Image (cartoon, rainbow, N blue to C red):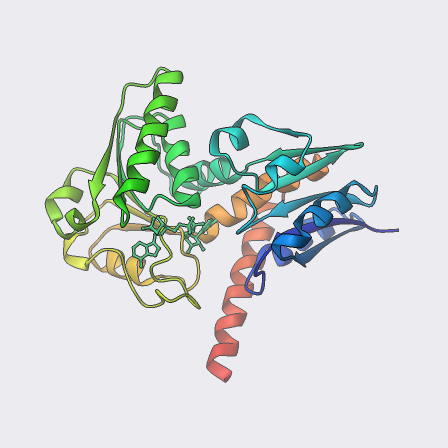
Length: 296
Ligand code: NAP
């Protein structure tokens, strides 16, 4: 009899996780099926309760339920508590434990795919939503020396900066952490002394209202900076295309997606995730989707 891992969220139509997680489970010949469970808010409690039935190893949780699941769990680990968001649930006997692998996913992808060492560097994060929180906590945890948060809604950036400063103090990090007005991104001077910029907004994301857009103009992007765009579809995104033309190094969001998934895989199975295989599968699915677009 197979076991199950659920992906819980809404909507889930464009999710790549079922493909690359199943490839990893099959690689180890595990009799486990990774399945989508698209639920509305009223069904969330039942969906989480069903993970206790003995047949489930756990779940991934995605938008919009990463915060809402917390009161439905028995305990939550340190990083998920820090972010106030859970993306992975593991059933240990009768207990459901919540984790957040987004911080790890971002940090690990930056190291392995971006060959970038965060310590003592200067960064700008665009956005102050869920992914910007994971990215900026990861940068502080890895001991960045200067971090500016630019967000369309200034108040949200101010709140995040306050939390990041408190966290920096807790871990004994003396770093400049501040807000950058969104309109300041028009100036090339703001970006000139930075080594990395991370886009955590949906600008450029396929199927979104912001498809085809970029948060930065090409002429403000410095040569040799690393531009990491969490948008993974299309690849390259409009921001990454411009950045490449400007002579910057680029990294797409697929890497974070796969590395957070790899960490979740290890939590459920106790086994090292076959990351390269997962990466190839995710890339393949994106390519296939492009092919279908052309055929249509
Ligand atoms: P979120 O919590 O809804 O936050 C969205 C952020 O983008 C907010 O800061 C919002 O600013 C800003 N924003 C939205 N529309 C904008 C616009 N038209 N102009 C300027 N800023 C705008 O979303 P999220 O979960 O952080 O996700 C953000 C993006 O990252 C999505 O495209 C998602 O697919 C991608 N993502 C990728 C990964 C990965 O593993 N690669 C992981 C997570 C998310 P306001 O505060 O002003 O609304």
